[in-house]
Image 1 (cartoon, rainbow, N blue to C red):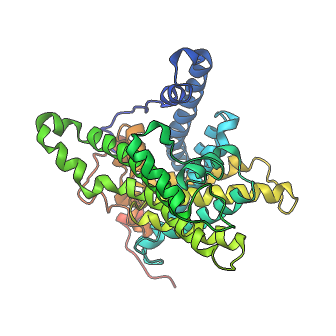
Image 2: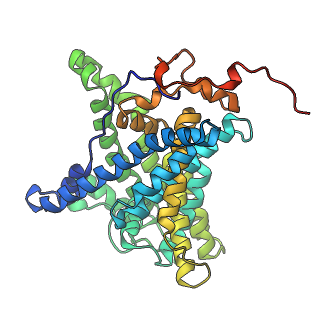
Length: 408
């Protein structure tokens, strides 16, 4: 029996209302009938994925009469994901497929590291991040990025060719004069595309991103420690001055700084513009050493792969796979859900906690002792967990009472 019987069943709350409120900025502009329909559709989608996962797990076991490692999580994961994604809104399918592909690739890498097939390198997440940023910068310079991604890149790398990064009219007069001095007291090359000096291009984006990042990081730090702050308000200065609180602002600040320093330096040589943009974008990824995030780096890489694939498809160089988003979501989600049973330690911590909340902690109650015999380290997170088995629904695995004999 794969589950303990002393567990409840709950579903997670939707975040659609929060997203709608942030995007509209005014509750009166929200179309509540459309919003409620979307919330209901996504709730049905999630519920189908979850209930289907449990249903197919038990049903396949009943039909086969025994369990093998693919049927302990993967087969039912594929089936439940396929039927669930058909119920989700069509325009949301590509986004979900990309997110789960990102998560599945991250899970696969961790699993290979855990089994000794690959090594875990310090700051290794900078490599996919560098490939992604190099590709994005190159596409941006060729004006081949859509407006949404172009705006994000303009902000993160301070790519304001014909406008000011910082509006001095909203500053204190003394600070405004200092900014103008930096803009006008240093030179720029003929190949540079930024409006003011090279020093200004590097420092303005750096200071703006640092200030914004520090504000966001401080708010998140205070929110995470809200309960302890209520008890001990005196710890606020210590929390805000810790290095952990400065990781995000340093990450955001170093991206434009490294990019502009390398770009302006290379443009003083005879290196072609395409190589300059690609190299500078890749080097700016080293900022991730301040804020290591496999999730961000893998998302950037997979987003680049998606963009390049569709551009090649438009040119007729690669085929368009019919229902590719459904296939990708089914395979990726099935793989991740399979590992939720077999090796949950390989799954991203945040997503594992999401699954725990979505199932009312039920996913923790697998009888993983039955899975370890297949060669997986399934009980690593649950060494001392012994499930309560209902004998009415349990069968004894022959492996536990038949003597093992070598193959002839």
